[in-house]
Amino acid sequence: MKNDKIKNQYRVNEQIRVREVRIVGDNGSTVVPTRDALNMAREQGVDLVEISPNANPPVCRLIDYSKFLYQQKKRAKEMKAKQAKVEVKEIRFGPQTDEHDYQFKLKHAREFLTEGNKVRAYVFFRGRSILFKEQGEVLLLRFANDLEEYGKVESMPSLEGKKMFLYLAPKKAGEKKKSQQARDREAAAAADPKEAPRQQQPDIDAETPANGGLLANAKISADALKKLTEEGA
Image (cartoon, rainbow, N blue to C red; front, side, top):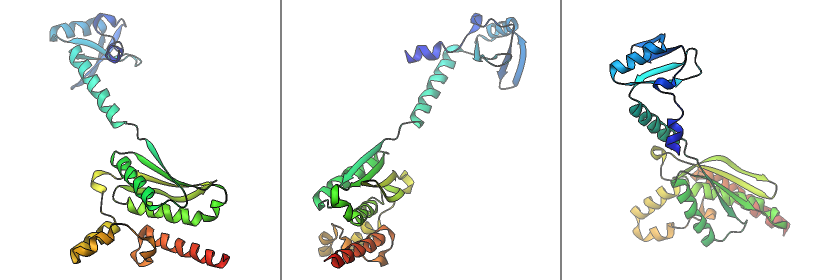
């Protein structure tokens, strides 16, 4: 059906019934009577193909019709590949997501970004849990930092109603780089192999603003949350 649609899109040879046409080619273009254009096509052993019917006069090419259709199908296929739809995958957290669930969702987010999809991560605050919005921000910042090698942040965590969103876009192949945490783990493993297992799970409370990046912001937010909790007590 798709091939027929492309084929029926163009008039060829005697199907072209206008008085004159513009012939385009490697040497430029020229306007000639349609009868002369058909004679030229026969002499060259090709077809007269109308490629722009709405022009005045219509634009045609002298080319083998089968070759022309092949070129059009190939071009359509290439354009479709370039316009491949990018999906947005959602990852949902609670403000007090446990470590096992966090790692499970982190793994899925890596897969989504590697496949070229965007990721929309959000923390859903149910009822009074909205009081812990800073804890949700810390969680999302850590999430972005752990995915630094695979995706780039399109927008920082922002609260919309009862949800706090973070948007990540996949990095291009040449754009990937190791996160600060990955580099720290490799450095620790090189210095003392016994320390490597202890570096596997990131600990937000162990991070300091001196490390820079997103986790520095996460540390500040965590301290603010701790202070608020102590004051409330």
